[in-house]
Length: 303
Image 1 (cartoon, rainbow, N blue to C red):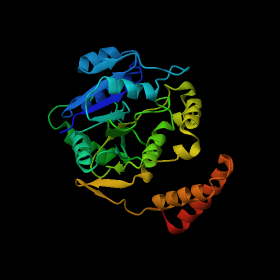
Image 2: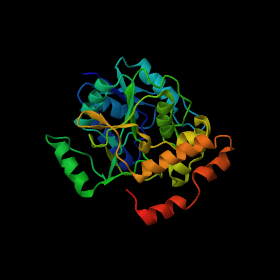
Image 3: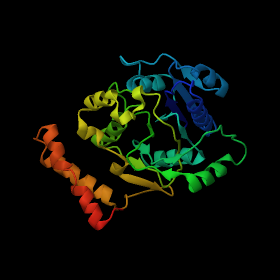
Image 4: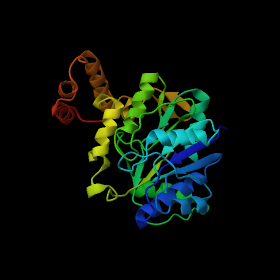
């Protein structure tokens, strides 16, 4: 089995709810077999939690002018402080269970270079999890009863061999764009983009965005615009889980099933290539004209 290093840059633990869900997430990571955890940054309460949970803490991560940790620095620090063959950057509100480790090992047996991702299950969690015997079964039951599978636009972790993603732009963590670029980069390098949604249950603990200025979503944050520029423009930040090249199902890689989302995404990519000579603002009008996709879905339905 190949060990995994999970790394993340948590938010401050000062808000009770954020502190609770982050503690839940990190604790679940420590229970995975053969996994190391690295927490990056010097946010309030982070050193104490790292010590309590017995995980590595690296406070000196590079930041942008706004004080937001940089993805490039996070990757560099994770590589410098880990000899493991698999690396995984993950948001600190995500609960993992043993099926995550199993999917990672299966992917590694099938491919030498790849990126593994999945859709998440959104669940309201307001209390500390007990992590007593059988906690996974209880959580799965709650997710099936009360949770909701997030649309394919959200990517909350990327697992990959340590030979991938050697150089990254200085993206700001916790803002939009960089996660889409991760999928775009894999396509550029012709690495398999493996969707393991059918094989794992990744649980996202819901929260608001009051930790951001004005309480706005990260999608509308000015640093998201900067991430888009660093990615090379909007074309590189349009990639989502719909752009997975293969699916991990029962330990095998299979071709993704047809869906209208994937179909129209394919049409968009073809149009981008055909009209690549157009300026970015005009190209967007051609490949994503307002209303045509919505009208088509209304007539023919959406899968």
